[in-house]
View 1 (cartoon, rainbow, N blue to C red):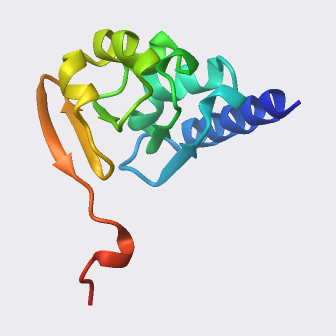
View 2 (cartoon, rainbow, N blue to C red):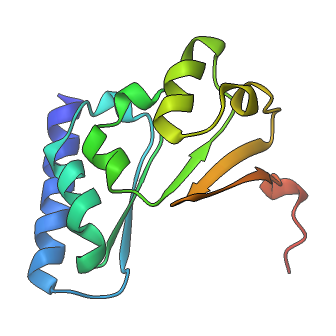
Length: 132
């Protein structure tokens, strides 16, 4: 039931943005625990065309298996946090990082791929940030 409701909501959001016309980013849809949605045609459509209509997409999951090939192909920025050793081969292949680089990640470290460029990035928890 969750998957049907989630897909319907994503589809309505995409349709609304299409009616509003092309624009700069005005909405970002955050999907956590993507496995709960399953493979969603609406998310595939948002990943492919959403930016044009001002609709951004963030998808999070503990395994790349839960994210469709279309979503993975149509996203420019990918962030990898430490993963279970059983996920190393698939994660390395999917995101084009070495298994060793992923295996050596510590808590609060990530690998970020921006298109063809990749960097290791340290994460500063919100409670440690110096913000005005």
